[in-house]
Amino acid sequence: MKKVMKRLVMFTPLFIFVVLGMFLFWGLNNDPTKLPSALLGKPMPKFELATLLNSDELKAEKDLVGNVSLLNVWATWCISCRVEHPYLMDIAKEGVHIFGVNYKDQRKEAVDWLGEFGNPYVFSLYDENGRLGLDLGVYGAPETYILDGQGVIQYKHVGVIDQRVWLEVLKPIVDQLKQQPVLAQGN
Amino acid sequence: MKFLLLSIFLLLGAPAFAAEDVYQFENDEQRDRFSELTYELRCPKCQNQNIADSNAPIAEDLRKEVSRLIKEGQDNETVVQFMVDRYGEFVLYEPRFNVKTFIIWLVPAILIFIGLIVILSVSRSRKQAHETKELNSQESERLALLLVNSNDEVGDK
Image (cartoon, rainbow over all chains, first blue to last red; front, top):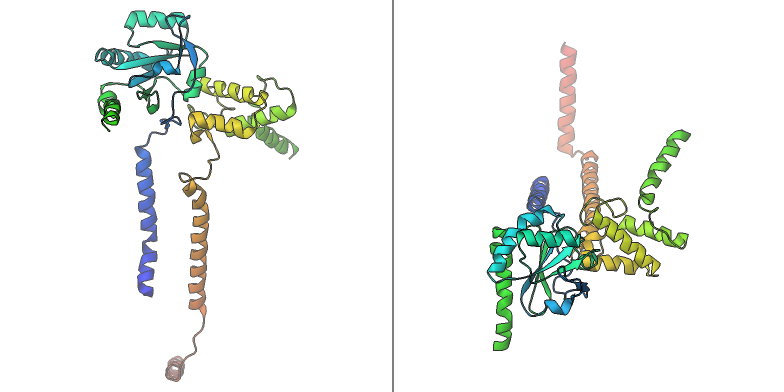
C-alpha cells in the first residue's frame, strides 16, 4: 500500500503538467478579444432613434420585431466594415433581413458610403453618440447580433462576417430560429 | 532615501488620477467614487487596462456613463451592475463568486491545503528517517564483532 502511494506521489508532477498543458492548449484556441454578450436571451434594449437616411423617421425596438434578422453595427471609420460590406450585400440579396446601427458616425459620410457601396439594410439606425451601442454592449465595430422573430437577441458575432462565418456560424442559427415559430404553431 | 520614498509614493498615486480632471463633480466623495469605479472596471476593448487608464473611445464612453450615473445619485453597486448588464462580468477586475468563477476563488485555498499536506508528510518521513532504532541482540553482537575485527586490522598495520 505504501509503495503504491509512493509511486502515485512520484507521478504528481506529470499529472500537474498534463492538467496545466490541457489548460494552456485550451487557451491557445480561445480568443480573449471575443467576449460573450451579456444580452443573449434578452430582448433588444429600448431605444428611439432616427434612421440614417431620414432624420424625421423615428424607430424603436418594436420595429425590429417580426422577422429573424441580423442587426449589424457599422461605421465609416471602421475599416473591417468595408471588408464586410460586399458580403452583407450578397446575403441581403438572398433575402436575409439586416438592420444596421450606424455607430458614432457622421451622417453625411455614412449616407455617401451607402450610396457608393450599396445599402444592404432594411434601415440603419443613426446612433450618433453611441447610446444604443452602449446598451447593446458594443465594444468595437463590426458586431452583428441575431434577433429572433420576437426581437430577442440570440447570438452575437464580433468581427467581420465573411462566407465562412455566415455559412458555418450564423446561417445555421438563423435557419434554426426560422423553424421555431412553425414548430410552436404545430404544437 | 527621501527621494526614493517620494518617487514611490508618486508612482502609487499616478493611476488613480489618470482620467479625473476631465469630469466635474459636486463633491470629493463623488470624485473619489468615480476614480474608484473607473479603476475597478475593465475596458472591454483594451483588455489589460481599466477604463480609467485607457484612452480607447469605448473607455471614454464608459467613463462618461460612470460619471453620469454617479451624478444621478446611483450607488456603486448600481453603476457596476449597469456595466455588467451590458458588457458581462468580464468588466469586473474582481470577479464575483458564482458557479462560473468559484474555481478561481477556491484554487489558492486548495493549493495551500495541498502544500500543507505535502510539507507535513515530508517532515514526518524525515523524522522517521532520523529516529534511531534499538538494535536487537543479534545485531549488537554483530556490531561488536565488526568493531573488534576492525580494531585488529588497525592494530596489524
